[in-house]
Length: 262
Length: 312
Image 1 (cartoon, each protein chain N blue to C red):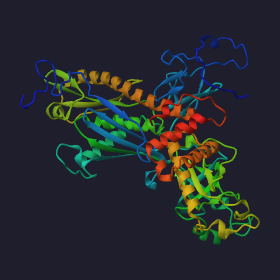
Image 2 (cartoon, helix red, strand yellow; image 1 turned 60 degrees about the horizontal axis):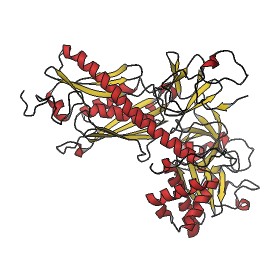
Image 3 (spheres, rainbow over the protein chains, first blue to last red; image 1 turned 30 degrees about the horizontal axis):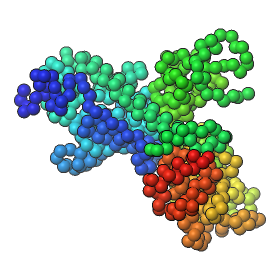
Image 4 (cartoon, rainbow over the protein chains, first blue to last red; image 1 turned 90 degrees about the horizontal axis):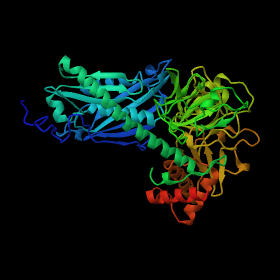
């Protein structure tokens, strides 16, 4: 291998101490961010993304309205401080535009846009830190933000990256690994097992593809459990908080533990 | 007769058989993964029940003969109809709802109004009270001076009158209670926190009037005495469409901002608003000598919410 760092050492550990199929630590914050209708901050290891969803609302530009369904508008911005080297990326950057288009096409079949004719759903993705798996973090964050905004989804979309080091497949790559080895990002809907996105920017041997793809689908289910847990916890906290106040119709009182933190 | 019922705690598998009582239509929770203990919370992609025995309502869709949730929220059931009520969503208008909105656009014979819904609402020129009597024909001159009545950015209180074919709502202000808003400030909260009340016009004893729009827009303003309300007898267009605030003294200004901040604190803790709760909260701030600014600090807000929810 030409690189200085070993991707996978003899003991079967990766550069950050993970095993081959181990995913990075994942944290999800669904609390209110500003005036967004739904928002989420998600971290995969050192990659951190903030997604804000607005809408469905009246389209700002009349040309964006469609008479039979809602228009999904995705804008991605990358913070100058998000990479190791400080670099300002313009919003017109081709790579960023492509990522926005990818996120849009991933969610178009999942969001029930036909329920909101002539409306627009705005998704603003802000990349706060990047350390590999950027697209996966953006997609998982967007799923959470959409669910948090109460926008009808057929299912959660769970994305994960997989790569292959010589013959051994590995999951959830860091930036270091992404730079060195071929990788693929897979997004799927775990309920039906439908895949909404498969994308790769590097060349991957065709015989390795199937193995990585299957592994990524398995890993997507793990991520689904995390996403589901976060949404369930958030929803039950809000339902609990609403129930703890006095009901107009004389409802029952529940415990107000949910009040402690918002 | 419509009966509201939550899901039974125990799945009743026998109910598919013969109905024993007219109202005995308990839901058969055919899925084992539906949480035992009768939790009513669901999230997108979660199977709720079979589509053969039940009808799908809002917040659900049917796939492979299963009713599946598409939003995160609570499951509600009316006889055979299963719906999921999203915990956070845009305002879903219904005819007769009282809403507060902001003019976004002036178009031929209509205004577009932002009412926190999925599309801008429409206020037709024919649905507003015009100067010179309630019953009169709309003239061409009225069309030309529409900006004299409502301009972009103006706030108004109105009622949902009807829906257009595409689901956009049509508003009307044909009542002396409705019309342009002034002398106060707007607070925005999630619409689910505004419950339907007997009256959405609330007067607090501290000299503050509240308009609780069902769309989550709340107008907090200086109290106007009943007798001084515009258009008591003859309709006074000057006053109703005025853009100038009345004189508001300092104590009223403080009361308005205090009430507005109480609403913000309650909303951030996701507590549904009622007039009794607001009154109680206002008394608490006076007792504890908390000013409007102090309310916004986290520990004071927590203490306020803990006190009033435990008292109730």
